[in-house]
Image (tube, rainbow, N blue to C red; front, top):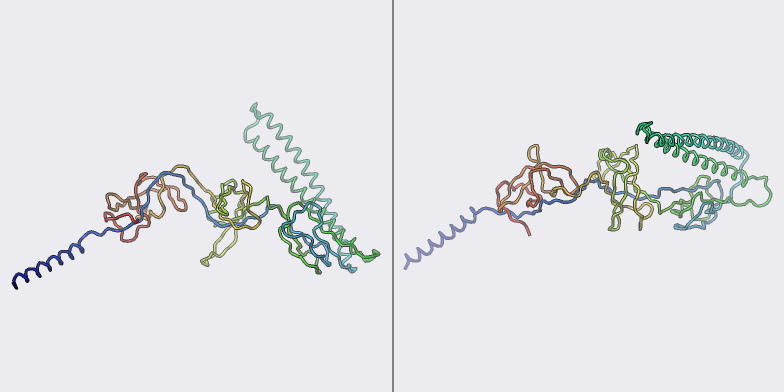
Amino acid sequence: MRLKRRYVVLLGLLLAGGGLLWVLLRPTVYQVETATVQVGPLRVTVDENGITRVQRHVEIAAPVTGRLAESRVVVGDSVVPGMIVARLYPAPLDPRSREQALASLESARALRSEAKARVQQASVLLGEARRARSRAEALAPAGGITTSQLEQAVAEVQVREREYEAAVSRERAAGQEERRVRALLVEVDPSRPGPREPVAVRSPMGGRVLRVLEEHDRVVPAGTSLLEIGDPAQLEVVVDVLTRDAGQIQAGTPMVVRVAGREVKARVKRVEPTAFTKVSPLGVEEQRVNVVGELLEPPLGLGDRYEVDVSIVLWESAGVLKVPAGALFPVDSDWGGFTVTDGRARLRRVSLGHRGARETEVLSGLRAGDTVIVHPDNRMRDGVRVAPRD
């Protein structure tokens, strides 16, 4: 009986030892996250936060020192050119200030005369450029001039048109400055009998009131900003990017603006020529430059200075072989990834193409339909057993 009990205990110990040995020696199966290599669209983008701003806006300032009457307009009001948006009761000028104002008036008149001459000159040059373009368009079909000469003639007209528009704008600004100084002299002339009339501050453009900077009745010095007017229907997008990314961006580059769960198509209008230093959230100083884009769709639901997410599309294709970027890692001087084949991880060396934010183009080393391991850890080796994580 004792011998039989001893055999039973010995058999139990052998079974327990064998089970422990099997547990220790059995192959480890790692749970891994997987994805499928597939053919689909891919974009290479520069993603940043940006803001919207009104393309054409004006900040109206007090033309004279005086008491500002309480504002009659509020944010959101519509205005038309010439509409009175504020009234100022000017303070009298002392003799010295009056002499300075007279000198300013003479200077304003001279600037306006110069601006008129520039408009006439720009008009003549524009006419000559248009006639040259017409001659070039007539000669080009017969081979009288080269294609580059025709393109140069067309470009010359565009340049002259911009110069003419700029000259007209300068003349308009010079005229407004002259009227401002003249109004200063007339309205605050101490020799005029009777109560002084208020200076009417008028809007130079149509649009809506974006901001009212001075709302209450108080004395303000000349040059104090009173309100800002613009057209919210004409918006542009401004986004600052790293200067090393800006080298790949040029006018006409597609953009995607995201706001409130929808996408609005846009394109780059210009890359500003001057960079600036900005401190990142991590405290690192970066050289960045502003990229200005124009919206190609109606900006429904957007207003001035709205924050938006912007993607500048550097490259895109409708059908490339792609893999999640998290499945790739450096291997020597190349790139590699693990595929799952018959329950085991297999190391593959791959050649990469364009790299998007979350996916990367694969030129060789993988095929469509392959299962790859995403975010492999340091335990992953070629040949180890793996199982997809639920």
